[in-house]
Amino acid sequence: MSAACPAVPAAARIDATTLALAAITVLGWASAFPAIRLGLTGFGPLELGVLRFGLAAIPAAIFLLITRPALPGLRDAWRFAFGGVVFVALYTVLLNLGQQTVPAAAASFIININPILTALLAMAFLNERFGLYAWLGTALSFLGVGFIAVGKVDGFDLDSGVLLVLGATFATSINNIVQKPLFARHKPLTVAAWNIVIGALLLAPMLSSGIAQAQVAPADALFAAIYLAVIPSFVVYGTWAMVLARLPAARATNMLYAVPPVATLIGWLWLSEAPTTLGLIGGALALGGVVLVNVKK
Image (cartoon, rainbow, N blue to C red; front, side):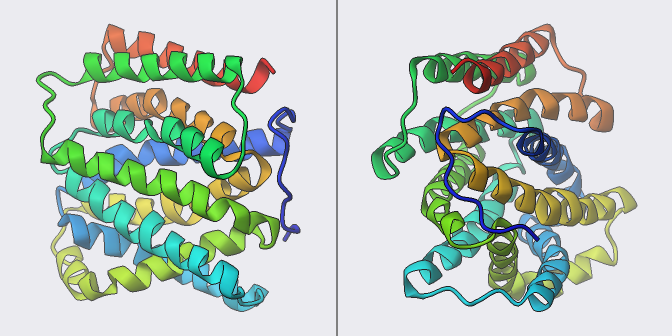
């Protein structure tokens, strides 16, 4: 277990370890959108959420018991609680409810307003700077995910599902700002583990209903629930915490613009959702924007 990671200047180069952690995060979270859609074929949105984080909380709690991290002081305790309440419980409830009507690719587009919101919040509350090339890369990436949304979803309306997914976007953006200061004093994996455990406890009232649905759920929906627990939750919440600890919040979240094109590809391979020409163009633009933000300094 490594020591807590100090804040890193925005101009710092990304090392191989950070790049690998970011790649795992992008792949894991991109796969979550089609997995949620598949899981919802056998579970209710709240039941899918409690199974996802209930299962992920088991290894997370074991990790905390083995490492025995010091309990946070009063100035940090609310930040830990905020992560469990907002980043886990509220986020997964809003996203699962929204994805009942919003397709996987469209949901990944909406969530990827997150880097814009985080950058604005980071400038306001963390005194982070976002240079010209970073803003140009952000605009290019945002244009790319817009192409994906237009090319992927026909008749896409601003319905309640869209608003719920947008609410999930605000939840994760605000959490990035609230929890960023924790990484100067706490190990990233400790923060991630507490997020999962606290979030699972908040979702626990739906556990009996989730277990009942698991007994009759189709095999592919059950697999999706287990997959969500292992990869996008237990693994990726940890890798994301380490990325956020190593980079400024605005720059770290900008990497998430790579999620929609990857989600489109995974949806094609997993759910047979063939990408459109606009989707492929958008994917190239989104990835190009990520490169511009993180290379041209």
